[in-house]
Image (cartoon, rainbow, N blue to C red; front, side, top):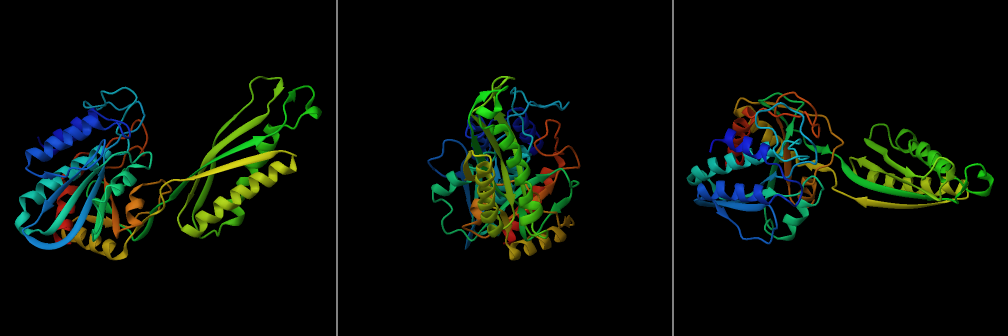
Length: 367
């Protein structure tokens, strides 16, 4: 199959996190047909392949994520998703295609390769847990560096976003339950209204970024879900608030979580109510190694590609879990300027696959 046929098949057959069974079988067949070794690992979905060069050298890894999103596709592509409510709206079909084409090119150039390259086709990036499953296997122990890519609808085909330091944010999820006292809507004096308290909490939380975080830092706090009440004339017992915290350095991450907890509890207490706060840490900030970023930039220039320094995005990316343990870099691959990621009208130009594969195969061999 050509890389275009591979991409179109993947786009038509998206699978959600930890359900990528057919996708894994498809990747396995492509690799097996190329004679590439697939490691035996305790993974329910996803896989790791290995190419060993003819000479000793470094042990490095390349990661491509493989899951799709729970979205109904709204493009007019002739190869649009055949699975209702599922779509490759984050470019993971591009990532897989680049990974497979890069593996094919490296396998053809084993004689030029020193050391070995592990190709990680990782499940479940979208829920932030797939990288941890790969790390649990121990397959990456002792690697010298790890490389990855992410599709960018902000860059044209042929452009690469390369930057040292933070490129995506640390992600935290919070849940706040405001506990008051229910009463008849006509007798508010007999209750303690958690809806009014919740409104005050929501407003107060906006002061964390605007008044507590250094303006030169990057952070956000968003309340994205409110649930409370059952009828128009009943003051409820409690209200649920949920949302997300995004930050780009560990100190700010810890501070914002602590400050959110203080504001929620103390504001609720001012209304004689209680705030129960839960904060769940998701992936940390993706933080590119400087030496690898310089190397990636020079490789791009040597191939006549157009490297640019992208702005930090506040989305999350579980590639950061690898970077906590190993030197790593994620490069933004231009797929043509189009609708944003996670949008049902997102499209990616498959011409980016060939350029991406040539780029990563050259970089992996050179490194």
